[in-house]
Image 1 (cartoon, rainbow, N blue to C red):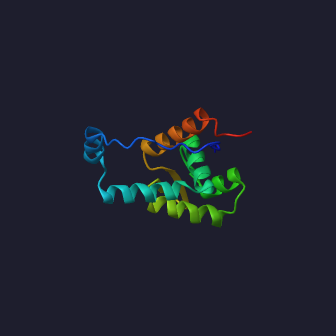
Image 2 (tube, helix red, strand yellow):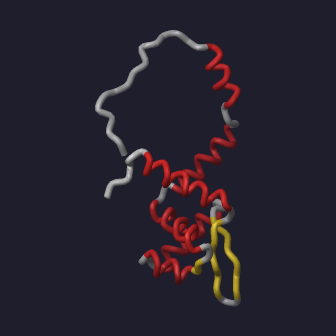
Image 3 (cartoon, helix red, strand yellow):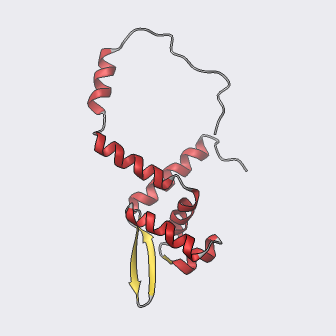
Length: 127
């Protein structure tokens, strides 16, 4: 992340009633804010982001494939997939004894793309 060299403080004491009213009108309901907060918590883990990224690019992978691709144990992958599934970020389908995972919908891939674009644009990615 970028370090701020100086603290930015507003010296203004004037309240802008129209801006305040607009902000209040556009405020999201608390239940929606809480749900969004939980979503960001789930996506705040690098391992889960790696899984989501792998599924975004391959479309469908089983636990064995994810384990090999991410160089992690199947148990660790399964645990993370369980959390992602409960958050409705991934879904699964069975084909015989094999369980394939994919992203739940296009919104998940969109969230990943927007986040990647944001950190790249802001120069937050360090080599």
